[in-house]
Image 1 (cartoon, rainbow, N blue to C red):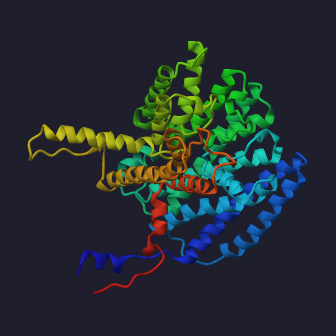
Image 2: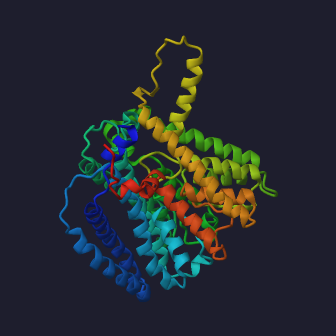
Image 3: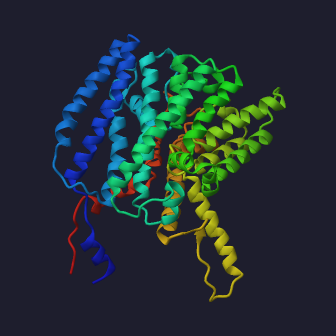
Length: 490
């Protein structure tokens, strides 16, 4: 019996009743969260938008409530967790696009906006965003906030699927090796929810104290902590005259790009926790590097050195944290600056944060492998050199997973880039837009707009979803044996 025969015989497809129950329960959570948006719309007197949201939520409740009562086993298989992760973002965006259509958006633009929100990307095809209702502006930011919460919770659940101890310890600290995915994820999710809410409340308070209007303070705090980047102004952060306010909003994104489990470990262990976490110093180094490149690569005409430095700080932090706020026109940047931002967006923030990209920890794993390879060439053939990151052994499975994700990420970018080149868009601007979507950043070189071809909007929508579920979940979604039990030859 061949290996193929064995794998075919042992492969277990997902259980449809399990998927149905858990997706319905997630749907009920989303319904409760969206009631906040309905309340804000009603408070502002925007009854048409509030009514459209209520109708959509009523239909969703009628579907999710009975399905959530389906009796199934509480245990989850690895492929079921990944499929639930992929479907939850897609279905949440699909249901969220319906009330958005009441804002004079066609379906594709409404769906684009909803996907950009729930995946915490921040790309938008809407012009004159200030002309839209307060309820709609809040709903966009609120979608990013609870989308970011979902991102972190699912990423924590996926860490428990990973056999690699290094990745889990560096992200979660001292954790159990138990395979109780639901139990472990649930326990950590409660802590994460408290941290996420606390960071959001602090951000809102500081922005309000800085003189930002209540609506602007709330929406920018929500989209900042979630590293989403939706702004209620067409000019994003450039709409704020005071640079300290721009920096304060940008720091919300920095807080969101740090692994959320780090915060409760920091409260527990104090300053010593900084010596344990490799991603925070790496985030600082990468941010300083891109800020320096932007400062020296883009000598803006008529701008003094201080203005250039201020712009470089905002744009560099925005790209590295994948937040997507901007205080300059990206399309007007020179090629070197755009390439610097592209690299930062590709890397992104920490695992266990709301940030996108391939994640800093995976970059550190690749760099450690490169160092290992160089060291190995100078050693005798019989010498044993253990692959470690910090003091933790790098397991073969986590190395394979990191390399595979990077390869798939690069392949997705190249495949998505091609349609834009065929359509005649500037190659560098097109690459920038695709990387921004895949890394769920939201910085735009001016391509995302209402006038963008429908086919290319769909490409960006797919990129945003792929980037949010980290590609592997989507590949599993397309794998036939995920859904069907294939017969085996024994």
